[in-house]
Image (cartoon, one colour):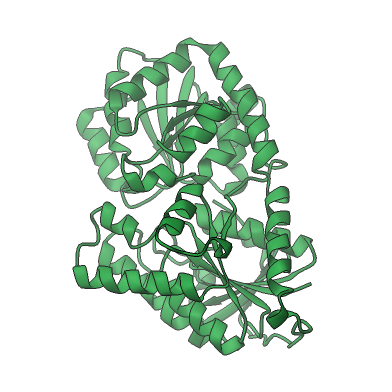
Length: 437
């Protein structure tokens, strides 16, 4: 078995999709017999606020579900304001190899998470210092996504980011892409096909499964007859103003309520806009701990998955979609491209809605409200799709096979390193702080 090091800016108890995915793969690799360490920073996403128990240390460690987590100090910032976020990303990318190199020992393989792209700086330095190959994980094409969203316009910065991006692909032993759209784009740009490994996000179908709706609503105290749920990051990429515009068109249907559960850079503006419009049918809620998300999904009549209408997002497969599928909830899918083909057209497990079209969204909500048989059919197909294609047990087995193949190549077939890891004194009692999303 191998010693694997994950490098990521996000890890539980943070609640984002990246933290959830990386922790799931790390924990499953431990279950498959590997030794796994995660090098990350202190929890702060998306608020920028560090919990008291994680403050005041340059380096600290904890154990979570068998995964050793090494946290280094870096500059933190709320998930709003482009320059401050870039500074936070760059801070981790530069400080992680300096502060964490000794503590992580000598891994056999490094898995570098991107986004953010500046993780590549830390990953490339650590791979060179430790003499190990690295897998570069691409969950978002950057800087292209920042350019399309309009948050990066400086031509010099774009050129520098493009150089860092492509040179990191070329130096990686494998490039792990999370969607077919990202894979196809990298192949069109000239990356060698044998270098690209496609493996999606997933879901733990033993934790996320259909539950009785009445019981979930009683526990949450929800009284409205029909609930449309958006649960996740409230960011600029999701086009959630469209949801407020649709809510305005739903005023003639007082039984329908829309709940937005989460946090993010766009939340203050969304709250202000909902107040300005007087939308009493829209309810904002704080994020839920990840272990309570199945209860939250069970209480909903429909789960909403949204992205903006940009070419970039036609290759997106949002993490929240897998969890809704596994819980057997009807999905309203306002994401075109790969997600539409997979969930709506091939599996019949979602109703597709044109992104950023509030009238189409309102009509789709009314349709599900008026057609319970359709909702039940979506529910059944969604659960079947999650079990067949996106369970983390299956996905982690494929990752394990890729790791074994990579490390068995002639240049890496020597005996796996057994160098002892350096331990620091600032260790947190792990399990009581675990939450996921």
